[in-house]
Image (cartoon, rainbow, N blue to C red):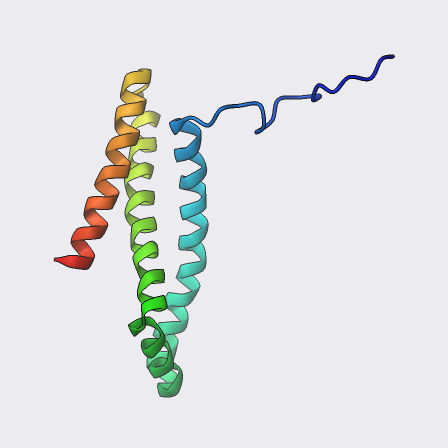
Length: 123
């Protein structure tokens, strides 16, 4: 049998990224971010109740530029994941399957997530 340089099955090097695949991957990624952030919220709440030093340390960290940047991306993850999850629920109900609607709703989700996040942080 002759050996060839062709891959055995299609993979990421062959497929061109599309907005649908990027949004699907980013939805999963933001879900993972929110999962780990939930532990940070629990730590913050427990430290508020039981450990004043840890509570003050966490507040000092999130008052700095690195902490605020992390919180900025977490709020963006929350708004994006919420809106994209709503879009998936609408798909489950049978709405928005036309390819034009899929692309428009994807762009709308990205823009609305940015607008919500900017509004939360700057107004």
